[in-house]
Image 1 (tube, rainbow, N blue to C red):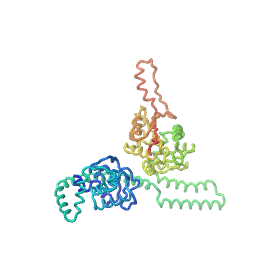
Image 2: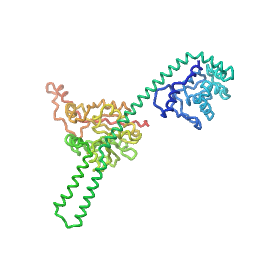
Image 3: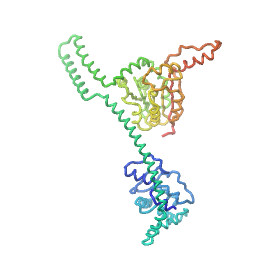
Image 4: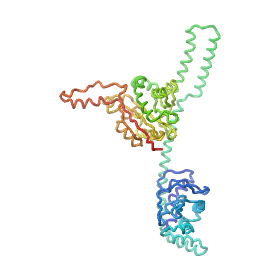
Length: 487
């Protein structure tokens, strides 16, 4: 029976050879228990310090099938550990080369190691090994071996057909899984390429740069003429200077999206003046200090940095921070303030960062602009780039407030869906963050003008229950930390 199990390549071995031929590594396919270890190859110097091979048990006796479920390096490592009670050495390379070249089967290698001098000294019993091992050995005899081989092939012919069908089904399933993974990867790459293409599309062309350089050169010549000649009248000098500067501003603004200015004006009108926003953001500085962020090895990353109020506060506190935004007008304003910002979308920025490289990821009024799948990916990427113990700040409008839920949330046409506080907190916790808290935000925000009625007024309890949603905070934040035990 054990010999029959050995008669065909396993599904794992077939997929290993397919991956080798395609030149790809692990496709994360759910194959049978495959150890997480490095494939050493026939030219590798040794098996020293091989990682554990999954859940393979070490016991006093085995059956042949205990070993045949493993392939290649994992098979050799498990045989050495189970039969010789030690790690593989240089001699294991010969067995591995014979196995890979098809010169010896697993049963033959298993028997050779078991009945070696060292294997005999250990005395580990393997039930059902002796007869298959001897059959394999006898088949190598000059004359009788050929007849034994033919007879054995006739006996196992029907079973081989069933085994082949099973292996084909397993390989087919794994290939379909690989195809799905490759399709998903291609889609993700297409999204990234599209984002990069949009970024490139708003950059100035070579002609724009040359035209600006020519105008600057012309302006320099005019200034030189003015300095060399008699002092001109002020109106004439002012006019000569204003025309090129205004033209430069017009050419620079052509880089921006036609909606950037509209949205910037919208923010100025409805979000409030920048000084008011700074007052709302001031309390978050304590959290930055508590998690030890804002240093060169754990900077703050602000997603959707807008006009840069938060980045200014961090810089004034002596903390290291940078931001990213898709509105070119906001980026230009931040650059005028000499803030560290770049044009781009939040997810692409997170994907570009290495693991454990950021102290705090903040997103103020960004989550409500994202679809649910993008929000989950953003939270996952933030988890990845944060240092152990790092923090997440996600501020968004509070739909528990009646005014927000009924009116102000929908003032912004780019908003998608309100995010209830308990839901967002649960999502953040479910994605692996710890110490996640909901903070109601009242600082520098208008209070409700609908008052509660006195308790002695008839129906006061019902009236006040209806008034209560008008006194909820206009905004809230979910503040969470990455576990210190995560890599």
